[in-house]
Structures are given as structure tokens and as C-alpha cells.
Figure 1 (cartoon, rainbow, N blue to C red):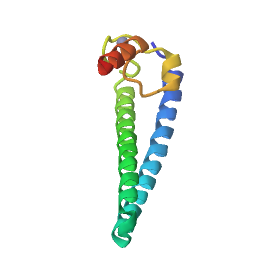
Figure 2: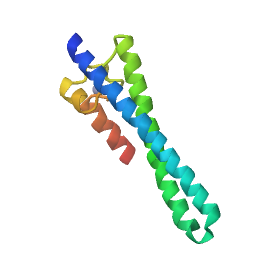
Figure 3: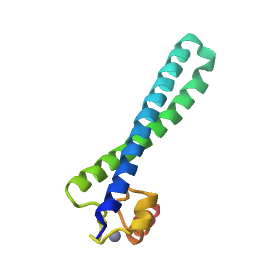
Length: 119
Ligand SMILES: [Zn+2]
């Protein structure tokens, strides 16, 4: 089991990361809007601007995905179910949580999951 103070520390980490992601998400949204504006004013840059915009929306989706995972982790803290692997129900190691506080799987399951995605 995780100790109360360990959970508190990870919670702070999650909240910090959340704020960071939110401000970054706003930032990339502004860039996307700017690119759209440029696109209509200068047709020559159309292809370039739209591919940049595309990359940014991928980045933005990743940020939103991470944000969602952070939200889930925070809810789990509230429900006292934080740090449990979603696949095997084992405790996720504190070392892993320190690196990735919103981890859903323990290291073993994460590896199995990634192999599954590759095949
Ligand atoms: Zn597991």
C-alpha cells in the first residue's frame, strides 16, 4: 500500500502537471487559430500552414489524452483506489508512479499492453 504522504506528493505532482497541460493546450489552440488565419490570407503558404496545423492538433490530442488520464488518477485518489494496476489489480510501484503518476498499469502489464499494440 502507498503511504498517505506518498499519495499526497503524487497528487501535487498530478495537479501541477494538469495546470501545465491546460496552459499548453491553450497555447497550441492559439497557434492553430493563427495558422488558419494565415491560410486564408496567403494561399501560397496553404500547404505548409495546414501541415503544421495538423501536427499541432496531434500534439493537442496527446495533451488532452494525458489530461484525461490525470483526471482519472485524481478521481482514483479521492476514491482511495489510486496506484492499482487496471489489468492485474496489483499495486503499481512507487518508483514508477514517481516517474508517471497517472500510470494505469504496472510495469509488467504496460509491457504486455505495448507488445499487444505492436503486433
Ligand atoms: Zn499489472
